[in-house]
Length: 198
Image (tube, rainbow, N blue to C red; front, side, top):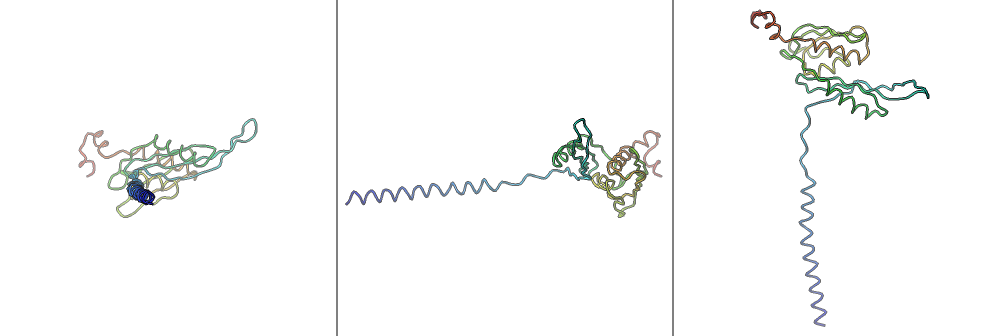
């Protein structure tokens, strides 16, 4: 009888020890689960258009999707990407990668552009005019997306010609490429910046 009692006590001791060992493992798992979130990227993307396009080949028609995406950091850098793929998600991913490859730097002067400019792409044309503080972005569709992601807060615009989002976006990008900051113009003329602005 005594031997049996000893065995039972030994087993009870073992069970308590195993229970004590398991408790810290649970707490460790909880610590691993609470991982701090990674900081968000400064680059932002906006899908302008997704269209289903067909290509006529020898065996019939090949269906695919074309995505147009604007990529920018709202600090003077913006780009447009256009890509095709058999699936919408893949087309958007390819367009984002294409947009990041074709980034341009926009000269921003007091939250607007330095001067009036006209950009053309295909049959589309866009006129951009600087605006005073508080005006906002007066634009629509693809033009608005490009200007906002470039970081311009006050501007007037008018889309002329083609209403295609791709042509309008490319025309806006061409206009922003052609902008010249006041410093460069003053150097070319051989005068100071104050003399040119006065």
